[in-house]
Image (cartoon, rainbow, N blue to C red; front, side, top):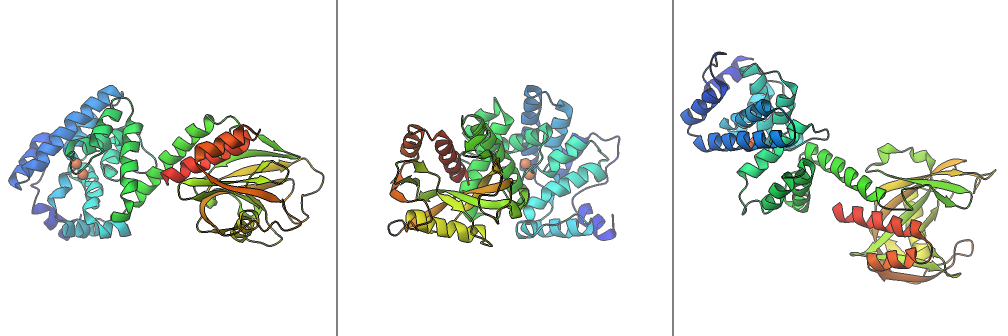
Length: 386
Ligand SMILES: [Fe+2]
Ligand SMILES: [Fe+2]
């Protein structure tokens, strides 16, 4: 530790000797710095964390110490937190420069390790992500996070707290989802830490997986003529090979309703289609929406893809990947402008309806298109969470 860091810490902390009791030392320190409230909070968190550790089979001693230690670095002002992190060569993300308070999770973890010589990975990890969560969460991370949120937040400042507490009685993950959903609704008004976003996308993916397992057609390989398609949810295009994309399909939405389309021969169909040669998938999507629904695409969000394998000898069109290719799936808002264009070489659409998701599912599943019903269901469900 360099001199600047030492001086900063010496304003608040007396040297710690290994024979001292850590909780006594922390209590004394908060007291000396007139932050008894934070000590009370830390005691509460420790108590809650021990209860949760007992319930979820984690180490109670670790949970207790995580509670004592997690907010120790809030002694420093926000400005000092930035300087200390810089001096200690702790990485500072842009979002942490905007909201330096959040640095206290990294700094408290540093204190646990360097000031007190504690080296237990679960303890240090839990303190490091107790405010923002992170993509990979161990049981102790979840325990400290939930204990902390349930301890500081009053019903006024945190209307989710009651629901979070009751969820924590049966599942730490459910308690975290309550919090994430609440924060997500407020996201326009706050700076979201990238670790929180990563955690949110992991939990979203879990929920999508659970929903998918309840959808009879979509969770099985689907046969579309010579093509066998297997649906896979994704949150980012990084997860696929873009060169494999040869089709794109959309769950088209108008506000919170969905658009469904019926062909001249009475079949309900999946909006979207095959890319033209050299065409970008977004251009293809805009074109298909225009041709099939007479609509303008306002926005789109990728939520999955169908991994397709064709048993045909030759590709459907000479330029598309064969026999394996990707049908990308998105949901998005559209604006209906006019009748479908129905170009002569495409499918002829006769009906375009804007209906509730329930009505769409009813129509699709009762006309033998459970695959489409499931596709609409999952796209719609994911759109609600995003
Ligand atoms: Fe904290
Ligand atoms: Fe806290």
